[in-house]
Length: 127
Image 1 (cartoon, one colour):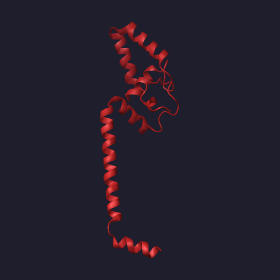
Image 2 (image 1 turned 180 degrees about the vertical axis):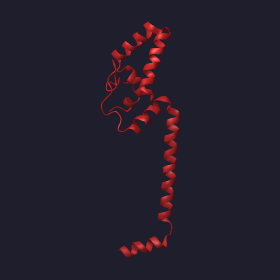
Image 3 (image 1 turned 120 degrees about the horizontal axis):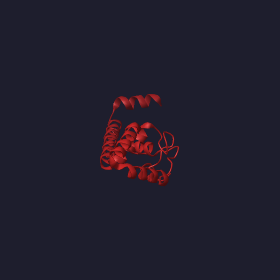
Image 4 (image 1 turned 90 degrees about the vertical axis):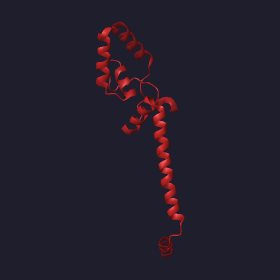
């Protein structure tokens, strides 16, 4: 699977009503599919009639179907929706998590490499 496949727009045929465009937009943005459908209907009724229909049909024709194993879990799907909506924030969050893991690992290394007589005695007893 290509690296950019999770940031690409796909039709969601599993939750579709007609072609899967609204379900794909909902999957891409993380917005509930019901709200996407209501928004599309309101936009169409507010004067966008021929253009929303044309855009819907073009997207349904041009976009590819979502791969079956695109996300490993719901948390994975939420993460990639966050990447698509705000890549800089997501990058900062990942960087922050790595810094926290690095700090915790350094604390563990310090604890186990320091002169811990109790630990040394336990290791000697096991030998």
